[in-house]
Image: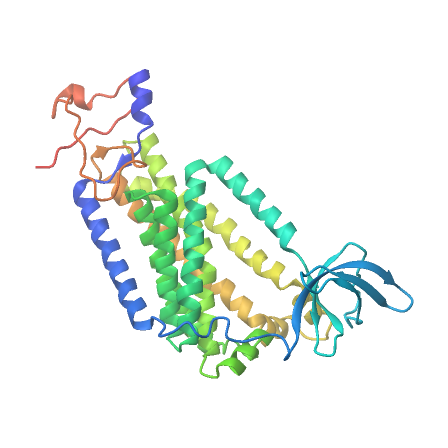
Amino acid sequence: MGAGHSHSEVPPRASAATTRLLWALVGGVLAAVVLGAALTWPSSWDSLGSETLLYSDARRLDATVVATDLESGVTTVEITTEGAEGSRELSPTGIPNLELNPGDELRVVELDDGSVVFSDFERTSPILALLIVYVVLVVAVAWWRGIGALLGLAAAFGIIAFYTVPALFDGASAPLVGLVTSVGALAVLLYIAHGFNARTTTAYLGTVAGLFATAILGTWAVHAANIPGVPSEAEINLTFLDASISLHGLALCGLMIAGLGVLNDVTITQASAVWELGKARPDLGAWQLFSRGMRIGRDHIASTVYTIAFAYVGASLPLIMLIAAYDDPVSGAITSSELAGEVVRTLVGSIGLVLAVPLTTAIGAMIVGFSGEEEDDAAAGPGDEPSVDSGAHEGSAEAQKPSDGALTRPNVTET
């Protein structure tokens, strides 16, 4: 049983010819990303941090609430910023239902007349604590894969901060920037987190196909549905900063980036499912692997579609409540300028997701089903040559005989 069990733990790997094809496809995609990045590369980063939120001669200070007089509404705070320490009275916030209690840490703004006004709560400590817990749990549960995922996530956010945002401010094509960002960040995320192997490449190509479908359909939907119909406060402020920014383009760019995580989750799961099926049943052909993989994929599609929907509903719950309070038909509310953007994002993202699942499953099934070799997929890179067991007798009955009842795929040497 030892030999059979050991052999079944090794997932099938793509043949050398298939590996070269996959590597060529990925190389072509990455070459297109580099070309797109070169065409849209920002000429400067001067727009980052160029605007101030404060009035002239105003400054930000850190403070702690000392006491609150409910009758007069006067709140006494202790300024903790170095060089400005002292007790001050906070001007009324004018925000309904805002409660300031002793011990609350605040961000305040001191105006040029010396008065102090409420700006926001200080949330650094709890958010930092949550971040530490998150990182520790990811590393503890996922080990090196978790570390790779965190590093990939940091790199992806770096791409958005130092390429996507400056390129959009620079007037580059928003749809092209969205595609370059999504496809480029996806390559960094996947290969750092999951390694350079055929399984990861399968997920990558499937996700890229889903992203292109999302981009094409999203381009039509954003213009046909006139999204955004009424710009949000953030979008209005952006147009004041730079009138050349296209709100339609921003909506499309955001749509592609927003769907990246869900697409990646589905495709990497489908690729892993096909590989595990091939490992457990080496006797299955490509079509059988595809049909069985799609059984998993259909369940994944169903669960992920309503995951996307509920994510958008949760984020827009206050807006939904506000719309529900007014006398307006459901059809009118759903197609209103306030909700139409979320509806379009959900539908376009879900269509891209549905298309990505069979594409990823088909790529994986062809690789695993037509592969005649086995190797540790976690250790092998997409450019590695297939190894040949020197102890195997090619074409012999013993080489193709199942060990201890376990079906195995015979090694094949390419000439």
